[in-house]
Image (cartoon, rainbow, N blue to C red):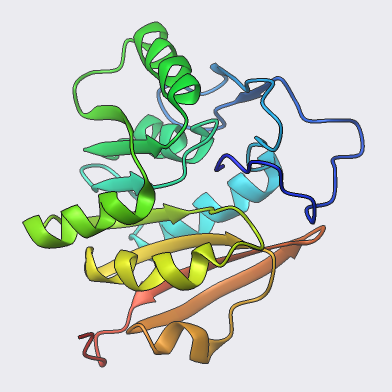
Length: 212
């Protein structure tokens, strides 16, 4: 889940943020991923992550093996690492916070991850714009931007531009995305749910639409 700095409108966790999460499936199942004590950094809860990956695996025909993945606001790295654990490759974890990036690099070393998983310090908008220019495409993109700062409106069209044909975008947001919110970017909302005050969604490239 993405780093959210000084966000005042996100409800606090009832018992404070966890200091670690566990990968729930794949080759790194039960492995611990630390969550740094940085204000606003919270991982996707286990229950939501399990539901999200059930959706994704169903949409991918039951396997992520060999599927390229970008976690553009990776924070704890729980989503991207979960995908890598299940065979996705290459997997790119990106976050603008250098401390987060250093921690994730240490986690990859501990997990003995191979070169198919990389961690980079980057602003998501610039990163996606660069991928668009280089015509890099991803099969699955995770977007969990800071709430209340207009990030989603800016980042979703950029994500759509680097999404592979029939690709998937998983989004966590402070509001529900309507079908129209997605369709304007050539995406189709295929699943959505809510946990607490967080809405989470799975979108697919709409093959009947043309994105500029």
